[in-house]
Image 1 (cartoon, rainbow, N blue to C red):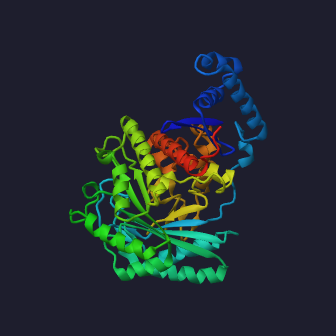
Image 2: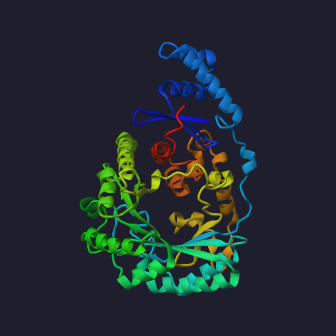
Image 3: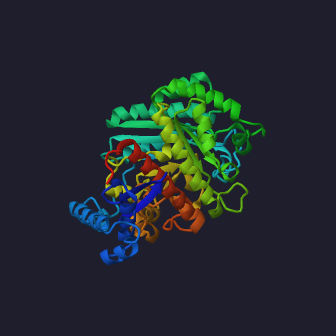
Length: 453
């Protein structure tokens, strides 16, 4: 499978299954585009000989055949060799440490922290039992992951610390290692707490949308005041403390700030270098929801952001935008790429009640209840449905050139918009593909400038 695309008046071709990326000239781009759509040699000449030199087209077709023989062009994949794993060992847990929050974000999928239920905090007993479940069911996996999630985890900080202590004890017992992560709005956090988190958390994700007016419009406090200035000050202090340790400033853009490249620029101007600004996922009836009509502007904005991003990095003003990072040389195996995030299988979420769900976004949805910490995982049918929910089982995904990067998309978004985890949310897919084109172009321009054909 081949995908051709254009970025900033430069032409690229990407072979999906070999991860071969080439910058090409315009004639080659046109030949490959027609070739990838099933046109034979005669058909290609009929369409291109009036625009390009006939001999040049012949040479391009010859080179395509040579690349194909080497396996780096128009390669194929045997989906049957990537069957769903029946190994249900757990690698990662998302702990809903707090079903409550000190903010009232308008776009919050978790109903401003309560997940559609009552506001509550996870008890220490539930948190410790969740870690016991993880370690006892992790099989041969040595490196485990635990994400403290909410709501706002800092509202239950003492329990966070108790769980971390327990985790360090279990590391010795099982001869394993656990990476703790926290997603926080950073609104109510002391310097002492920052120091603790800096020491114990493998990664920190700080929620900050960008420009003050855009942030405050969507992310007011529980008292209906702006949260931007407090979060910005705390985030700067925390990120400075983190240094080179893993962290991200994570924002959300909506219909109200489709010029989101300005938010990325703003965050970078404030000293942040690890940035992720992602599209809101919401019912199109809501005033802030992104719809299909917004896609042309969003695509243009991603290109605008990518061009600025390249220039900034070239000038030595380094930054990393999450969606513009791709690794074509290493990374997960094919089977892992086709299976996605592992929700429902190696990745699970635990609610404050001790109920177990396939991932954090399904918490509170009875149809996706896998079990609880007392009885264990009792609904294996749900788990099996997630295990088989791979790229190879989805018609929308099998023919998509971006399949090796998204694993079939988010199951929660698929269910919320289509009533099934088996059909991806196509609006999400469109934005993913555009981001990926920009990311591949950036990769080529920064790493492969001498490999044009």
